[in-house]
Length: 427
Image 1 (cartoon, rainbow, N blue to C red):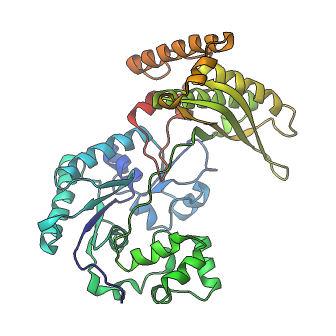
Image 2 (cartoon, rainbow, N blue to C red; image 1 turned 90 degrees about the vertical axis):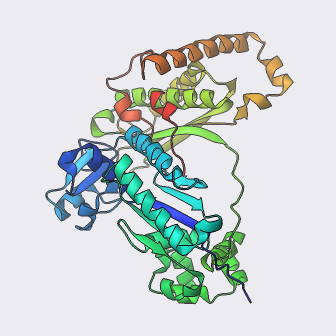
Image 3 (tube, one colour; image 1 turned 135 degrees about the horizontal axis):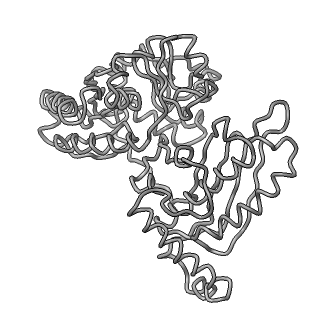
């Protein structure tokens, strides 16, 4: 018989409507109003990347197209994302939480898990810590930054518990309450089950949480086609499941969806240059060399092949000039593609990464040929530019001309799995 831990071992803190809440904290005119945060201003042909709870009341959610959102809520206030502000507030909030309980794992820009140890596992003590965190955030970071907190036997169930009451919730989920308190949830309410996995489960007759709960773990593994299915089943049952090891970095890149006025190919090229320099600068700061440069574009056309991608192999490099030269070569090929006059999205990726600490001696020997000596000169120049831009501000010195203000179009973005470092907003 499966033995489920009974102690309350984890607390999961989930900030509510985080991007929109930060904007409401910073801009009093937005407070208690329906707000949608968008990646690109000046067009309704974009989607909300965050919505305030006042907007959610109208049915607006992440992914809702703005032209649809405005139909649902004519008084909707639309504001462009300011990712640097969200990172700043993230660090303030993490500092505040750390005053009450050590941070075990920062899961995303707006979620953090904390292990409960010793007396903290007592239910009353855990609740008191959670309330102190909420009050501390309100007092020391911002009154409009609310969070939902879940407390449970493991990391997974603490996250589920936090989702049971939003916004500004506090939920304790104990082992003896399983699975009863979960049976009203849909399969999609369980973190890790998306649309495709839900359909895969439905295809084998699993339509609700109770069906899933009563499966054998090996059966779940077969449905998942992976051991991750079995791990998921055990986590749902309250068992502490070890985190998989961190994966090795394979690429450094940046992507951007262009606003309509930046989509003509000549303007899009400048965005591609900025993204390339930004990626190379970040790679250089992380201490990597790359040997491949990949360019992906999506054209602003209908009814025709709308994507193009190509890569080029390079000698190991980490300077701006080598990769801008690669971009120029690939960009010339785009002009020969039908209907390539307008570009909707650009992505650049650097891969074939080797950390400078892992460069083999023969690699360094190769860096002594005439081409490599030229690269070393460019490396020194690129590093000098980094120092100037760090000291005096983004784009104080650049390679070539940039439309103004270019940083508005190519600033760092926050993904579900990665929080940008503050230095990235100066690259």
